[in-house]
Image (spheres, rainbow, N blue to C red):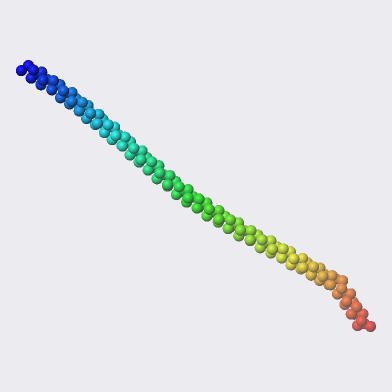
Length: 134
């Protein structure tokens, strides 16, 4: 009987060892699963941060594109205004040159009239009177 008890005790010890090994493996497995779950949560948080950062970068890119479009539009408008102003200045310059020509002609005509009225006409009239008197 003593042998049976010894056998049972050894079987019990072996079972306890097996159970402790199984328990240790289960605990290790649970620890690994918990660690993996923690890593997954951290990765999800990182992904959320990256998504947020990516959204921010996309929004910034869109704003930069809109700003560039506005700058280009303003630049084109400024160039258009500058071209119009140059055209207007050229027209004004041409008008001023034309006015100068006209004024120079008018001055010349006025000068001729003065010469006519003060020098030629009186002599012509005097000559006419002399002819009439004769």
